[in-house]
Amino acid sequence: MPAAPLTRETLARAPKVLLHDHLDGGLRPQTVLELADEVGYRGLPTSDPDGLGRWFREAADSGSLERYLMTFAHSVAVMQRPEAVQRVAREAALDLAADGVVYAEVRMAPELLTSMPLDTAIEAMLDGFAAGSAEAAAAGRPIVVGTLLCAMRQADRWVEVAEAVVRHRDAGVVGFDLAGPEDGFPPDRIPEAIAVLDRTGAHRTVHAGEAAGIASIRAALDGARAERFGHGVRIADEVPPEGPLGDLARRVRDEQVTLEVAPSSNVQTGAYPSLAAHPVGRLHRLGFAVTVNTDNRLMSGVSASSELAAVAAAHGWGWNDVQTVTERALAGAFAEDAVRARLLADVVRPGFAALRD
Image (tube, rainbow, N blue to C red):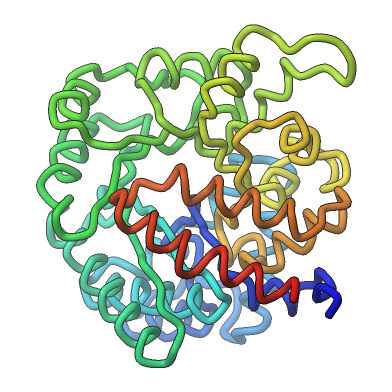
């Protein structure tokens, strides 16, 4: 029997692994409206859910990372209560599971939820993910969700967030992330936070190589000792069409540092003019540890399946390529070894085999 054609619909049946998805970038438009109504938030541009979804995509599709990030003012504004955070997290787990994601790491900066203490925000996220995962499993769509806590690079709460990662890691927090503007805010700016992670063996990923270039990636690797790069796509600056790799690119490839690539988001923020021009295909072909991610499902109007389908179409990928990036993502996940091994043997490989038979 021939393999299933590689389309968005067949990819929805494939077991997928997602490493870079922002909680405050993945709300359902209807949920944004309902939460806004509950708290009397009047800043939304429309009260129509379809129109609101379009507005988020169009506002984010500006070619500017700064303008892209401004859309989060609305989503964060309606998440300023623990019950709202819990609802958004629950729905995120359900939506990802419905799309065939079997393992996801979803991130959020708890310091943006200014109306509540960090621990209250974190516990609401964890409760929501647990509830959504339980519902998804009962519906026959099991998913494992790990939480990443972001510290904002331009703020000074890194140590608090790092300590919260350690405090909650037995409850579902799997690692630390640095988010926010890369330029002017190096990832080792607050070494005390890095020391907390080092001392406790906590995992960390760093947004690097998105808006800024090679220097940002080098600082994340050497200054913050990043295990993964959020985006990291500007490593392509050291990957010429012909000729040898640059020193840092060779190191990143040889050490298989995971790249949490989100191509549609990169096009929206102006890093590349189109998916076809995006270097994800070239990096994958050369053996970099490329993974494909959504970044912000609401702002980019994507799902894990649609993003993989678009990248596959633009770069000529087949099922082997999709399975490879999925297994790379699982290898780079911050889950326990036993969880990764079980998912690989019992879910990912059998799931892809079924699509080929």
